[in-house]
Structures are given as C-alpha cells and as structure tokens.
Length: 230
Image 1 (cartoon, rainbow, N blue to C red):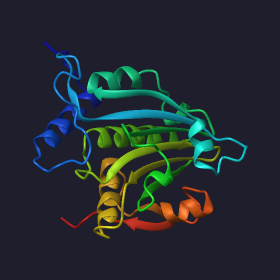
Image 2 (spheres, rainbow, N blue to C red):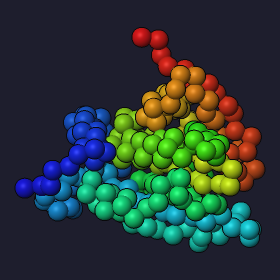
Image 3 (cartoon, helix red, strand yellow):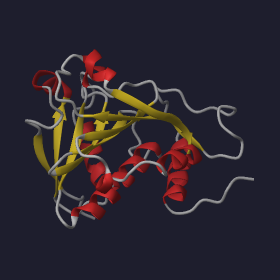
Image 4 (cartoon, rainbow, N blue to C red):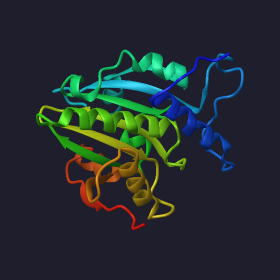
C-alpha cells in the first residue's frame, strides 16, 4: 500500500493521472510498469534536474556550457521528486548566479538542443515582498511541467535563474515550426500555472536569437498575457 500524500504532492498526482488518461501520442518514452517501486506513483515521463553556476569564463561553446552543468538526479515518480525536492533550496534562498534546470530525461538543457524553439520568461524583481511570490511560482511551474499541466509534448523543461537583482522562471518549448500560435497557448497556460494576476507581463525569447546573442533574456519580446474572458 502506498503512502498517503497531501498538499503539492497530491496535486501532482492528480495532474499526472489526468495526463496519463489522455490518448494523445507522446514523442518521449513513458515511465513503464517495472521501472519504479510498486508502492510509488509514476510520472508520465522521467525528468532530470540539473544545476548550473554562472561563470565569468567564456562558455559560448556548447561543450564548455555542458561541462559546467551538474546533474542532480532523475525522477520517475512523485515520491522520488519529493525526496529530491526536500534538499533543494527554494528561489528565495537559492544561491545567486546559479540556475536550477528541470528537463525531460534525454534532453540537454541548452538552446542548440531546440534550435526552432524558445522560452517564456517571468522576471521577478527582488524586493522585501518578492520571496513568497517567487517560491510559489517556481513550485507551481515544476509541478505543472512534471504533472503535464501544459498538455502538450512541446513543453520540454523549466528553469529557475537566481540573479543579484531578480529571479527568473522560464518554461521551454521545443519548436515553433508547426503551429505559430502554440507558443502563446503555452505562455497563457504558464500564467495560469503560476497563478499570476491578470495582465501579467512575460517575455518570449526564441533560441535562434539566443544562439546569436548568447542570452536567454536579452532582447526578449515582452507580451501582456491577459486572462480569457469568462
């Protein structure tokens, strides 16, 4: 018999169950029976967590960037995620100039891996009141990605970037070559997942531009994502 879970873990289980009930084909390997303990609750796919520390050295070459990444572990079940999550600092206490990256296992968290894709960025300026906002938004984003709340195979990961004056939460999509409106649907869903207010300001950066200017955030296009009228 499995352990009874509540709070964020229960919400994650409910989201995973909804996703696993969907009949849509997924382009990534699903977590299969036998790949996890029988008394644990599987995610739809496995996820890998990475940490990266911003360096003053030249890391413009993909190999140099990958060498600076440290893999924290893979998670295939809700319980595995919670065990790892217990040791990870929240955005309010995360070291400055460091990033936490959560991506579908098998994908490398780098622009060159998704040259036709991009990411939505939500920037939170550090103030005396920003800590609970950032902590809540990041937890919701991670649970939303792992729980398949975006309901699209295009979402491949999310990133927490801790900087001196701000915290940035990003969600990455793999390609914009199909439906040009798909990225906006992801952005609108990201606003809902993070429980942002109406008229939330977010930025989108395509990775073709990132490869050219070596930045995930510089020269990003700002959008106001409004809630749909009921």
